[in-house]
Length: 84
Image (cartoon, rainbow, N blue to C red):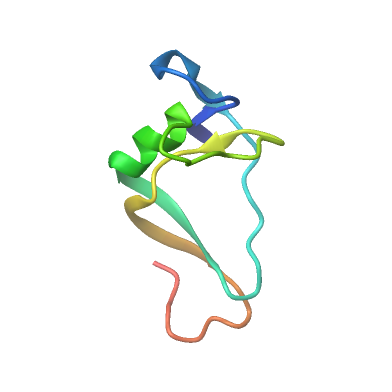
C-alpha cells in the first residue's frame, strides 16, 4: 500500500512516501481504505519526538489518526460495522 511514513524522529525531512506492507487486522479491528487524512498536533509531536511522544521504531510508522474512507475488512468479533 502507499503511505506517508517515518523511520525515525526529526523534522519534516524524515517523512517518506512509498510502498509499505499492508497491515493485518486483529479479531476486534477493521481495515479502512483511507480516502482523506488530516494532520493534527499529535502527529507533529510524534514526528518530532518532542513533548514525550516517542515511537519504538521496528518498521515504518504511519502518522494520521483522523481519517475518512471505506471499510474493506472486518475482524471476526466485529458485529456492528459492515464492509462499504
